[in-house]
Figure 1 (cartoon, helix red, strand yellow):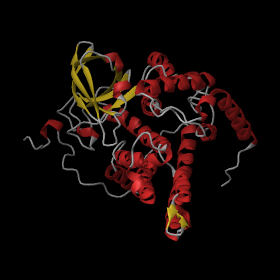
Figure 2 (cartoon, one colour; figure 1 turned 135 degrees about the horizontal axis):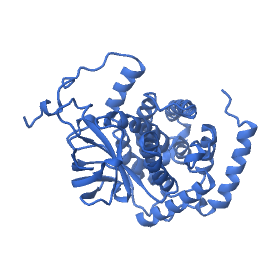
Figure 3 (cartoon, helix red, strand yellow; figure 1 turned 90 degrees about the vertical axis):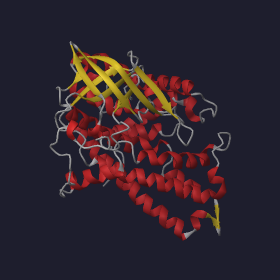
Figure 4 (spheres, helix red, strand yellow; figure 1 turned 90 degrees about the horizontal axis):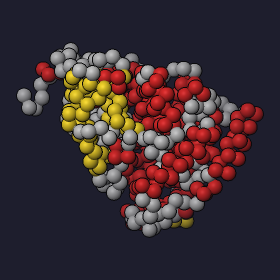
Length: 409
């Protein structure tokens, strides 16, 4: 395979590099350590608006929905150039990577015209309301219910681990509308205004000190039937579109913390028994193993992006990248802490940022093995849908959801 830029790609890279040099110059320096969440979000919105105005916010999207109509490789090139800057946190990854593909697939043209441009420009932030406390890693076991009342649906229940809900203007939501059907058949999908009466968001403080996850409670929340995506009872089908895009998006955006290049830099800068740690044979062997995986993940992502550019939807193959990368990131972070020795446990925000990121990544990496499907769920998907192996035995298959045995009955 030849990864050199073609003449057209080289021209695009030059244009992107010039645009970034002019518009991203303030981000050549690291962001201030004492930046508040509100300040970071404001900076993120400003940067997103700049990218959208220039067409760089959705390079592969069709022009008619605000994209550039470009190729997957152009998107990769821009991301490579953009990575040279210390940009604000990407609070739009869920909206653009998961919610908008679902809206483009199932919303009406009028709804797309209203919501997609504002999500693309950063004017509005979206979240994904899926996981529930009683469901664990089984999304189809959800219990948040929606009941029809005239032209509205009345929603009651709870979601948990909702990333960015406290910042969001809108969200996509899957509910149970018919408990007398098997669990995958009685679901219906909506989008809603997060400022609707009856929506309560409670941030969850994590071990790392971050507050990105939230609990969301729904008490008699009214959602117009016009904001239903897909047919009544077809919520699982709509959810699969979101889930496939979610796994692809997670595998693409997870490296905003640490990456292989950072680990190489660390191994060359800390001392081992005989000079820099990278001189140690065992360290080099471990780095070589991760580099092989890193390149495999990159090429797998290119293949998926090529399929997307040809009109295909993300398939079960996206689960492979996500399953491999999430565990690899956790291992890399742990290895980085070992190289740092006792200095690795320091999380003081006033300390040097590069090394501190390994402790932050170590605390946050386990979440990636849960978000977008746990390791076990992903392995089942790979085994059944990629390798064609027999599925697990399901005791609840074909049983009405309200008849499935629980600890309460």
